[in-house]
Length: 377
Image 1: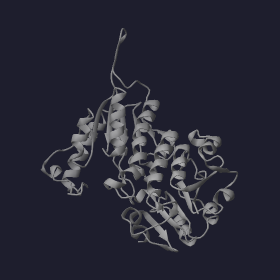
Image 2 (image 1 turned 90 degrees about the vertical axis):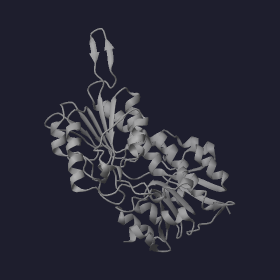
Image 3 (image 1 turned 90 degrees about the horizontal axis):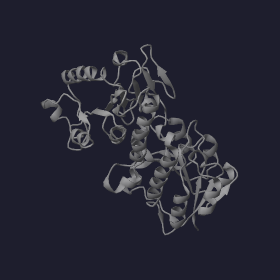
Image 4 (image 1 turned 135 degrees about the vertical axis):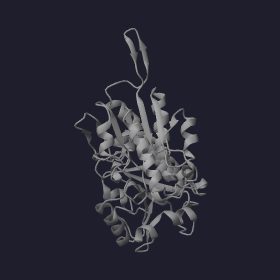
């Protein structure tokens, strides 16, 4: 009997993405599955119900019909109580669970006997790159952060030579050179900004400079030895942190745009931009805080608000930045899910091997228990 996959519309406030597209519906059917899609699932990503039906999905009028008999539920955000209560015992749930923070949803999934996988826990190993949701979504978030900055900024980004005089290029500082930061650098450069960037990892310098930006850091001997063999940053001394803070403060005061991207899994986002930094910036400057959902990198940022400070600086704090480019974000996320499901759908049957390296790393609940050590603890 074919694996029954359900895709329901997102019920979390502000979520515009969806977990399947017509393209991925066809791929899921090719794996040997049947696909039920709740009506309205793709509207936030400009996908009408008819496109799902044309791809081979069965479009259901309501939640209970979509979930009836489902072996697998695909979501962007974790399922709500109404969705969990409609699951059959032992069903597989795959989504961005936000498992470290959303304990209530994890507990509800445990109580429902669901085998729940958190896509944010997919390990960053070579063969899992095609399933790396954090990278696919961060890439778009970095792009969109620059677009939001350009919208909020009252001037142009590129230098323009006109008969009436020259318009100076915007000075843009990107803090954090991971996936989101590198895409922000590339996008700001395309728009013509003069871009600088910083990161605590020495290896980031070459990546930043390859994109045409200038790397900003205190490059002493401690910095050069600040990365572990696994590519992670080491804790820096208080003396180094003070020197870096002084350099950052002197640099931020000259910037028109600042984009912050620093996140620490399972912990609040580090504060990178203080109130004093903000107060030092010119009126009309813009800061985009990509970590606002995790507590924020910027002192004074607020989720889903653009805060204008007393000195005229705008702090953009849109939550779910990938959701502001929903069509592309959904397309990439849905492809990540297809690759992930390929690990557990074999010859048209559901076969969940929790000893498989990637599945083992991502599973959160199974058999009525919370099995992920990081979440259970």
